[in-house]
Amino acid sequence: MSSQSTAGFLGALVAAVALAAAFIYGPSPSQLRNPTRSAAQPQAAPAAEAAPVAPAPRGPVIREVPNN
Image (cartoon, rainbow, N blue to C red; front, side, top):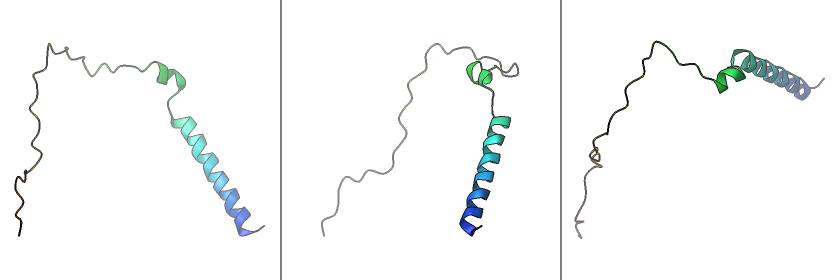
């Protein structure tokens, strides 16, 4: 058995373990379709209308470039 085939076997083994862990610890398909809402987080009342926000300053504006 050469080192390349040993590395391939070990790589396949690690990939299989990672895939199994993803299926075991990942969300079930029913959780993906119907996400549950936490009772600890109350729903916020929708805001009537948000006030317009002024744009953030973007930095210094160079109006003239000295021509030396």
